[in-house]
Amino acid sequence: MANGAQIVSAFVNDDLNTDTLEVLAAGGTELIALRCAGYNQVDLAVAKQLGISVVNVPAYSPYAVAEHTVALMLALSRKLPRSYNRVRDGNFSLDGLLGFDFHGKKVGIIGGGKIGRLVGERMSAFGCEVIIHEPINPQPCIDQGFEVVALDQLLMESDIISLHCPLTEDTRYIIDTGAILKMKQGVMLINTSRGGLVDTAAVLSALKKHKVAYLGMDVYEQEGSLFFDDHSSEIIQDDVFQRLITLPNVLITGHQAYFTKEALRHISETTVANIVAFVTQQPLINEVKVRL
Image (tube, rainbow, N blue to C red; front, side):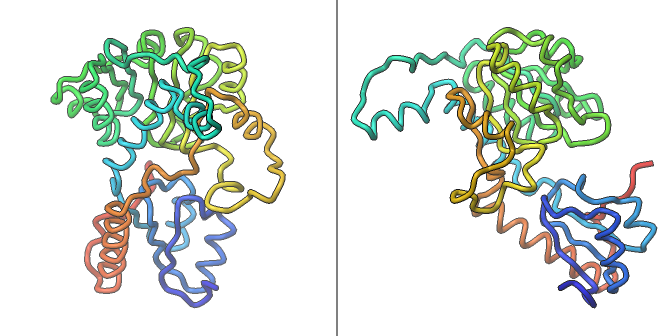
């Protein structure tokens, strides 16, 4: 389908590995215009070798993702999915629906970029104490009055932990068995960033031991074979995912945190602007380059 196309547009779960890039290059592709912020699905080194430029849409939905993050926290803390289903069945019992206040809780945010700071602002408004782990560029967090801490301190002190960092070799499985052992008993864990940040099998084990009491995810490390498609008439073969969705203290959405009218408009406008810049030989201000 892309043969002969000078420009190819791709989304977050399109696997642009070596084989794919070589096929695109052989067909004459010179630009990959990502309609997303993340680019870990692209082998940037290979793209550079093949003479293919890659552009993305940075920070296209910070408010949407931040608001969805808080929505997951609220739904889990007040057991809204279970309550909703009960009321539909005419069951108004409060048994098993005991929640907890956000006020006075400590929220740890891993990743102090735009989205992480927006989540911090919103949780501060609930009366939470917010701490942030941001090793790359902590100054914006400090400027907004957030306390920047080491990862271990965040893991040990937080009642709620929310992930908002990019997926790199350094952050892959930043939440693993070792990290979970450092967390408080009964912690809430939220991931609306990248699935590969979390060792899902380790978190499943922690859920069964009640170490992690609440899990909210909009991303999943194996989401490529699941998300954005209708599998309702199939038997999902991913056993870890199947076990997760049976647990009452787990809430998973299908990579929809970004999915608002405003965000889609921004994605469209920025993607078109990136393509126009390439065609008219203007500087590619949103070009993604290999990190040396």
